[in-house]
Length: 142
Image (cartoon, rainbow, N blue to C red; front, side, top):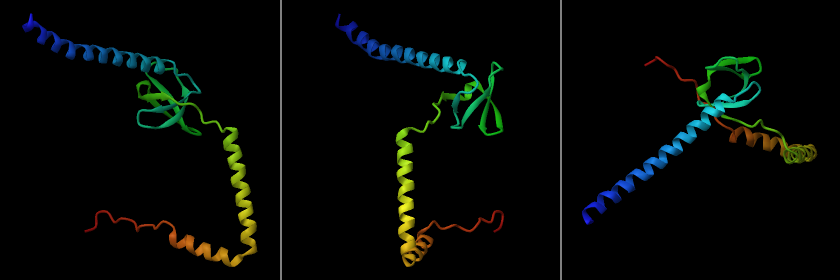
């Protein structure tokens, strides 16, 4: 009996996680297939390469057309679609923060018109603290 216990435990330790992992993988593949089959025109999607776009045409079984910019439509395999993405909708909080920023900018411009000397100093500081642009590379020259 003791001789059979160790191989049985070893088999359980190896087999159970393997079976459970396979089931999980099959569920994920089924969900991915369902998502790719449910894509319709107007959906916002992300491809496996990270490209975002809006589905323009789904008439083919294997390919879809994705509009990546206004007037720019590209053809992709359905399998290249990674996920559907919710369109970005500006909420009331974003609108309120944008209004606050605009009010802050307006008050800052009113303050800067009162002190033109400070404006020239801050402009010089911004120029010196800004990003530096590297000269272009010279390819092929040795």
